[in-house]
Amino acid sequence: MRPPAWLAAHLAALRALLVFTVLLGVAYPLTLVAVGRLPGLDGRAAGSLLTVDGRTVGSALIGQSFTDADGNPVPRYFQSRPSAAGDGYDPTASAASNLGPESVLDTVAVDPQDSTRSLLSQVCARSRAIGALDGVDGRRPYCTPDGVGAVLAVFRADGLTGRVTRVVSVNQTAPATPFVSTWEGVTVELAKPGEDYRAAGGLVTPVRGDAPEHPAVPADAVTASGSGLDPHISPAYAEIQVARVARERGADPAVVRRLVAEHTTRRTLGFMGAPGVNVLELNLALDRSLPVR
Image (cartoon, rainbow, N blue to C red; front, side, top):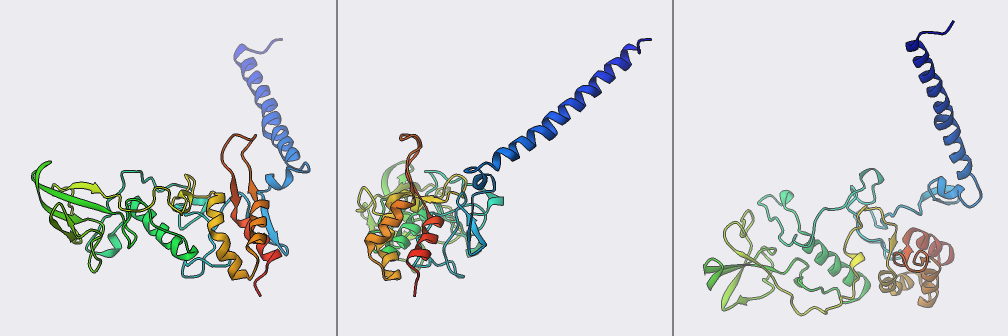
């Protein structure tokens, strides 16, 4: 006796559920686990963890900062690029700053806790700090000598045209000195906390200054990656750090450069992406080969 049509349909659906549960819920995951245990793949499947004396110190896939308790760079180590992921390289908060090229005005609030820096000022401050740390020229176009965006709010008599009536260096406050003293014959003022000079009618005017066209501090040293977790820096950023690291470790710079080269990944298939230096792997190699006495 054949079962009713509705029952036959439910039985067929149950059989399909059981078959696909076994195939996709059991066999497929176990197959992937087995593949991940193959020699050469097991480390990557486990997260590419790096260990020292049996202690896990990080992953080759996720960057980390090499700073002291106060957030200052530890001079004997190569420094990573900035990170916008949480408090820095937080895998649970992978993100970018979402600031773009038009982010040039700082928010200068009455309460300093409410103030925020534009992308331009962040880049300027980082470049200036790296220049001082590594003994290179930290100047960049559109940056002031004190490390903020060189941006003016220019007020004109007829809005967009006419003579200049007032000029404010919008990213500098007292006791700083305006990066230019006058603009079209008008004395430049410092910004006052709580003022919105763009809303007041000021024309936002970035000033290039006399910085070199190609800064000594490369772009990856002053900007975060899209994920905030990138473990690599460019060979150019590694190169400007060689002298400092060698000096701190009492080593020959040529030896440090050789270690940098050994931990530099090339372009994928010879043409995709860009070369990169894995900072964590490089610093671990430094501690093994050139320990600080």
